[in-house]
Length: 131
Image (cartoon, rainbow, N blue to C red; front, side):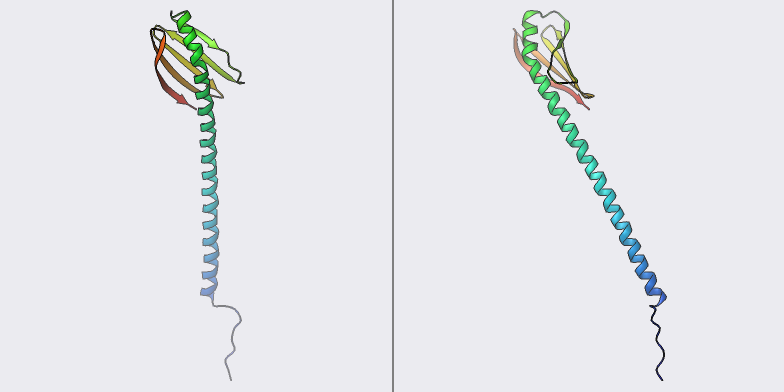
């Protein structure tokens, strides 16, 4: 007579299959978490690039106004530069020989300093930009 065979796998084989399924689920969970973190990081970088670009445009738009302010009145004073961008603010801080331009848009801020000699622009430095 032939021995009867059991249709159930051995207990060790069932445990191995369960372990592999659990390991696969953990791996997939880590992949999903990593991808989510990556997408969030990329969204922050994109938003930061948008803010920095807009701030640079605001600073560049204020340069002719800064030159005009410097030629008309080089005594220390502050003036607000009108901008057509909603939520943006540009302020000119005029000092003898220099104008500091502060630009703010959507909680982001940048400052640029323009150096003048004999009424002509000779140097421009981007002092800081923060989001």
